[in-house]
Image (cartoon, rainbow, N blue to C red; front, side, top):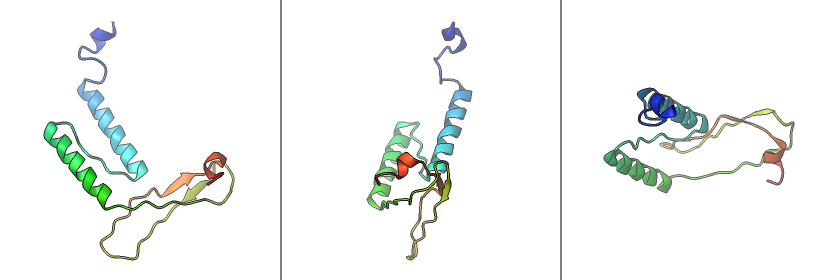
Length: 103
């Protein structure tokens, strides 16, 4: 019966693609990441090229939060003091004892 509802299989309808794209954009926004389209061979090749280029030009920083109350929202502000740099970072997180211990 599921085959009748989804002749091309689950995830193959235009509505499914639209929902998936919206979800990927939301994840990208929430995580501070970058969205790359790879829905064609040319697009996939370009996406990998852009990703490799970005990885060559980025830095990663770490943060060890002070102990606190689980469930507490913490704000994050990352600033740079050099021109022409772009910061991609979340603006907050929810503290949990397991994420704050041992770091």
